Length: 420
Image (cartoon, rainbow, N blue to C red; front, side):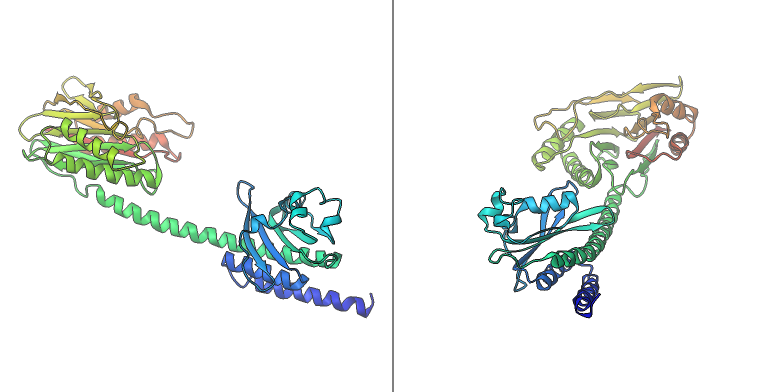
C-alpha cells in the first residue's frame, strides 16, 4: 500500500477512534444520539442526518434529526425516504446512491422523487446480531458527493455508535427501573399504613388477620371499623385487578366505605352509598368484591353485606360443620344504581367466622394445582378449637406448604372473628 493511500485510511481510523470515545462519554441517550448525528454529518459532509431506532414492536421512531449547523430539524418523519431506511434495517446492509433521482433502485419511491433527494448514505446500527435502527444522511442539492469510502466510514461509525446507543438505552432502562422500584416501595409504605397496625379488642370476641401481597402493592385489603354501639365492623375486599392501579383503587374504596359508614342507618345503606361514591368519583372504576360484617360485644348476632365477595365461612364448633354467608348484591364499582341488601347470622360461643380473598383457594403449587376450598376447610377444621390467631396461622402454614416454591400470583388476605 502506498503512503498516499494509507494516510487517508489512517486519518479515518483515527476519526472513528475519536468518535467512539466521544459517543461513549455520555449515558444520556438524547445527548448520545445528537452527538452521533453531528459528528457523522461533519465527517461525510452531509446536509442532514437522522437516527432512526426500532421500538419493541418493530415500528420506526425518529430519535435524532440534525442539520449542518448542529440544529434540530422539525418533523423529520416527512423529510426522508422511509423505504431506504426500512430496507437497510431489514437487510442489515448499508446503502449509497450518488443521485437517487436517477438510481433505478429508488426512482419508483414517491418520497425520493417528491423530496428531491439526491446523495444518500444509510447504515444499520447493529450490536452483535441485533439491529437497533439506522443512521441516514443525505444531500438534497448536490449529486455525487458520497463515495464508497464514505459508506465504509459511515458503517464503521455506525458500529461504534450502536454500542454507545445500546449502553445509553440500557442505562435508561436501569434508571427507569430504579425509579419505579422507589415509587413502588413508597407506594407499599403508604398502602401498608392503610392496613390496621394492631388487631383491636372487643369483649367476647377474638380477631386475627393476615395480608400477604403477591407484588409490591396489592388490591386486597381488610379493615376494622369501630361502630357507635361499641361494636366492630369487619371489612375484607379485593379489587379485581393487580398492580399500582388496583392499589390506588383500594385506597379510594377504603376511604369511601369509611365515610359512608359514619352516618348511615344500616350496613346495607352505607355500602350502597359507598358504591355510588366509588362509581361517581372514578372515571376508570374497577370492580371490587366486598364484604362487611358488624358484630357487637353482647351477643353473637352479625349483620352483613356481601357485594360479590367469596362467601365467608362460619365454622360451627359444636357440629364441626361450615355455613356460607351468601352474596347480597353484585360487586362494587360496576353499577351506580346498585341497591344492596343485608343478611344476618348468629355465631354461638366457640364459632369462628373466616373471611378470605380468592388468593387462598386459588393459590397454585408448582404443578399448577389449586389449593381449593376443600383443603382450606380441612385446615380450618383441624384447628377449629384453638384461638382465632392459631386457626389463621394453621391455615397459612398449610397453604404455604402446599404452594412450596411456586411464586404466588394473587394476594392472600385472611380475616377471622371467633366468639369466645
